Length: 306
Image 1 (tube, rainbow, N blue to C red):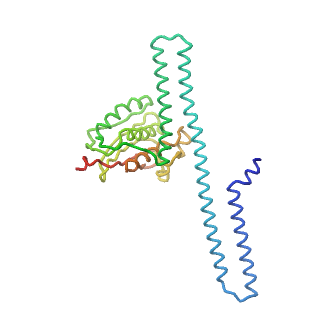
Image 2: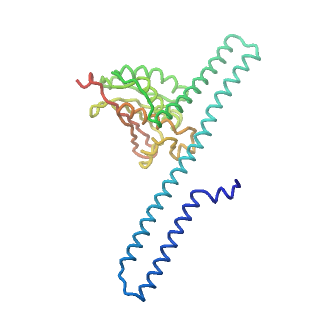
Image 3: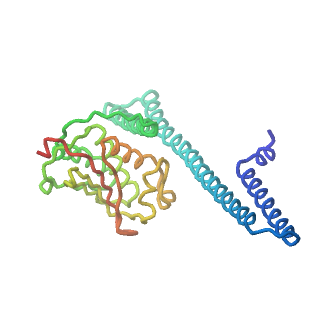
């Protein structure tokens, strides 16, 4: 089908055409009514009815346009996501291929072989994590995410998590702060694997959107029969209008679109995992350049409420 013909059949063209037809028809009817009324003794009821109809049609048309605009934005975000994911998958594969070719074509000593293998394994782990994010987001969107809930002691869990995650953050010039002495022992009704994925997304989000040397703070408190996990950073912060938007699938706040790469899945996964636990996720920010605090509330186990 020729491109011009496809454009003529575009939904926006049809919406505009229908709206124009409605408006012209009703305006013509109003003018006809006014002329007819000058020669007939009639009330204003038909005119009021016609104007009411015009208002209803305008509201419906505006609703259709808004819905379509959102769909267009979602489709564009999907295209950007596919492009970014393709790049993110291709990059580690290219690195793995390079290291394997090096092992095949060059004579290397044991230390060099170990270095190549470790680098390849690191890239494969990154590739696996990216694929898992896509699969998790797909399950969340289809309401098909399954988690294994049970009693989970949060302080030992966070001790183990912080100890392992610090090593990754040091490679990016960042620091993870976790003070177990300030944390009250709490037992959550949670899935440790899903909760670890949730924290990974929050911590990685802080590192990716902040300058090198960022300090990420991990905290847990009790609030309204829930354990509230908090991940705070000293990065660029968020405007209040972005606080809810950042949890949408594929959404990326304007500063991140300009300065960082990403798929826009991380925080969508966070809120999906939180809801699967029967909790919720939200963000707070004092203002631009004052950092963010992402909080996740998960229900306490009965053992912790006793």
